[in-house]
Image (cartoon, rainbow, N blue to C red; front, top):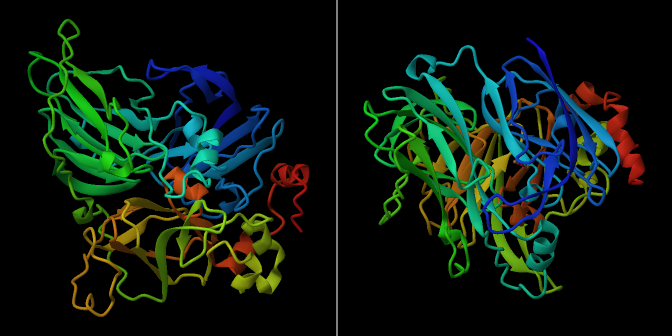
Length: 504
Ligand code: C2O
């Protein structure tokens, strides 16, 4: 195993990825798109971050990594660290024991759609599918805004927007461009590692006249499952195998198409699609994709993990979260779990755990607006999420892949444990770290609290993070103290000092 080090200076640069507007974006070492982080399972990853933005704080979150024993490296500001102040530095340093397709992004308020998001790939010498493909290719999908996030957020959460309509992106991108060509050799099988690193839009993805075989979702290997179209929410990753044709007669389009159902209003002239091409022969043209009449994506609920981890059939701790969007007295629209809209605590929650002694198991000490849940060690925890809102929401839990044990159709209303008692749950449920709940529907997730840490559970629509659709899991706090008391590095605490945040 190796130590892989990246030195990242984060600063504004200019870019025009859709050819429509040049705008400031957050680059790394003067470049945008930002680099892919690539390690091998078992490696130690060291990321030295210097914040040279000048006008904004920042942080990095490594989406999907469990960070067992390294909760202080998780990245969300005021949760596991103070934000990195302008002019300051911070080092993320941890070992990665899980293979798969991940991504990294800023985790300070609404910042990553300004460009600070990129793929993070953990190669696996023991990949169970390695005999099924010849080569692999990383492909990112993203929505793209011409406006800057701070301006868009100010308009989104304001009295001028009482309905809470989310800003609609101007474009979709693939690998941060609209002109991606992928060289294909006849007869070969490719593993496409696909990441949706957008802020808001889910994307329908398909390869014209080629079938996909799904082999991984969110870092969890699956038994190969055929799909002609997938639906990839913001923050999800899907690896699919695509076998090339045997001839070089023509080239083929592949498409990411933003789900317009998410948009309150579809602006005139919006092109929801981004096209790339499988290029068999560079001398031949790149055909425009055919129109699609109806979107019928593959249902991920039936995926079976290769490791066949069994359903946790006994639940120790149930958490019910009822989701609602509503207006507060200021006239703006916010998002609520059980009537509470998340507000950052004054001190990062992790640091409160570490300084609280035996009190750390008392949820009251974490404030009244953090939707906090204290979990005992090694319990089976069930989250029942009822979506009392006509919108779709992709939910993400830090530090875990959860079992998706139930997902209702649209408009099913609240989960009813009694009428569902006779339901047969999947014996080896799909596991992932980001899952969609349908409009006015519900989902039931289970995980084992075997990873001491403060882990957020939130909607991964970046607008809804800002409007408060966030809960805090305080998992095994006394064990967390044993792991990390006195071990948070000085460069982390220095950023709190610089911001006048007391940590003891
Ligand atoms: Cu991609 Cu809080 O995470």
